Image (cartoon, rainbow, N blue to C red; front, side, top):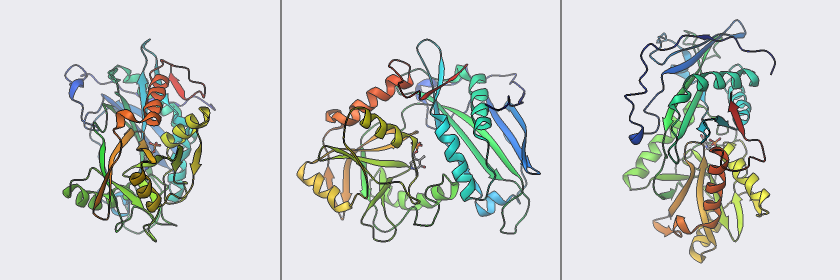
Amino acid sequence: MTETLDIKITKTLKSRLAETDFDNLVFGRTFTDHMLVADYSDGEWKNFEILPYGEISVSPGISSLHYGQSFFEGIKAYKHADGKVSIFRPDKNAQRFNKSAERLCMPPMPEDIFLQSLLAVVDIDRNWIPTAPGHSLYIRPFMFATDQYLGVAPSLSYKYMVLLCPVGPYFTKALRTKIETHYTRSAAGGMGYAKSSGNYGGSMYPAKKAAEEGFDQLIWTDAKEHKYIEEMGAANAMFVLDGKLVTPLTQDTILDGVTRDTVITLAHDWGFPVEERNVSVDELIAGAKSGKLTDAFGAGTAATIAPVGSISYQGEEYTLIDPSQREFSQKVLKTLDAIRYGQGPDVHGWNCFVE
Ligand SMILES: *Cc1c(COP(=O)(O)O)cnc(C)c1O
């Protein structure tokens, strides 16, 4: 840590905590009492403030609305049985935050400032962290351009904000997926590796078309040939094929997920073979047919480990073994839960405690 971040704090006079229905949380719909805001201008971050969650006022001419200079992060905080609160691997998100910022010509946020901002706002709303199984506090840091200027050029001023949402499980059943061979999420040289808002806007139309056919998620393929697997929805695609954990290499078309890295690290810990490489659609389908594809899931902070129930390709649907019978992802889930809820050893020091 360099220096302690100076944050102006204004607490709400009317908490919404008591009237919140924690048994029926819809992901991303319920916000806590407070949020954090900071401004960037004249080349520096300033005005860090925690205040009651609510509307903000911006000019309709801000360039983020017109040209998409905007990106976000997604992180989770957990409450342990002894009441301690920990944030899972936020240092990784701090690094990725700045990779996204660089790709979009936006200013970096010093990593220790980013971490301090999360710790401060989570501390204030720590009573909002649900403790039921699979529940947590979703942390949404984001940055957007605030210059009033319709010229296409990087803004000189920005806002950084952190919102908090108590959440339950994102997906509750195994996913019916479809391998997308027409639309693409990102292309080489593009910004697929950044968590930039525009990537998600562009993915909604193909996802909507797939939903109309009854699919829960798309499996994206490469933009050039549609022969290689890239990601699954907004999560990294991971498979157990022929007894090995197989996942596409992250390059500029694929987001370098923290959950993906976590799963790979656990596999290494267990001596489970890992292959980060191009994964072709053909080998995946062959594995589904032969039974060598024994596990398939999306890995992401929001979705955690989302089991793929079936994969559709060129009009054929291949059903995979029941998620409850999958050794690898069941072990990952159990181990991850133990670490995040403080019930097992955290040998890699992934929990960042909110004091
Ligand atoms: C956020 C995200 C992921 C998952 O990253 P995590 O760091 O594990 O949350 C994967 N792919 C895309 C496209 C994403 O936006």
